[in-house]
Image (tube, rainbow, N blue to C red; front, side, top):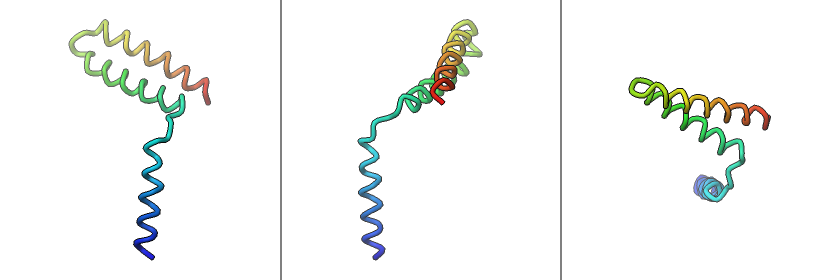
Length: 67
């Protein structure tokens, strides 16, 4: 019984690899990436950091519109 359950769990997780990401998931990834880059640049290039933060804010608005 345990082996059957284990093999069923593996098959369902395997199909998750082919699942297409929703628009919201894609935007969330982009938002997180921009925030991380903005944070890293905040100590060396404040202007670029602010531009990335503004872009992240625009993406945040798009995410809110999807909800």
